[in-house]
Amino acid sequence: LIKTLKVGDKITGTVLVPEGKTGQPLLSLRSQAEKFIWNFLEEKLRKGVPIECKVESFNKNGLVASLYSLPAFIPTSHFGKNLALNPSQAVGRKIKVKIIEIDRTRAKIILSEKAVSEKDSIQKQENALRLVKNGDKFLGRVTGVVPFGAFVQIIVEGVSLEGLLHISQMA
Image (cartoon, helix red, strand yellow):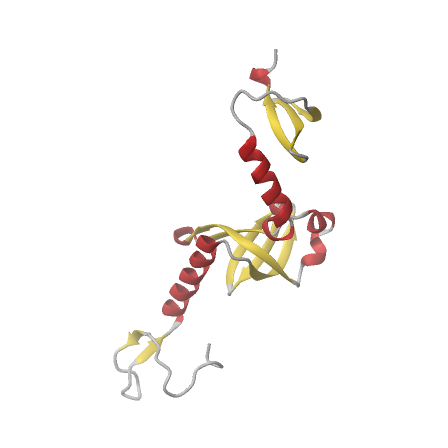
């Protein structure tokens, strides 16, 4: 911020000390800057606009990133296909993401890389899903079996969709 300030700029600060050693008030821009960043990020979430973050580290649950100096997280379920192949290679790099959740009170920001890298595929799936109505019948292919049911792939208008067949719905 200091590098971008010019004489004549209007800023909002918070008084820390009304009269310091030099007789002048001591101000802080930190809280105002933080409010600005949170408001900026909430606007990006509302608009669904991609944003760039810097990946700081990788763990078994996902990537830890920095978004305008705030910590953020990209869960493994929100990795695109290419990122999922080798997520540790993203460490130290900037990547494009979409904000999918913000909780300012808990300082929590959740991001999705998949929402950017697989945008077209996701849009096709959403369009196909809108065509599926309650009571429709489909021929499906089992793609996975788990203790609580089976994952089944169906094709709608040439688009592959996968859903859960819960054990309570099996004959």
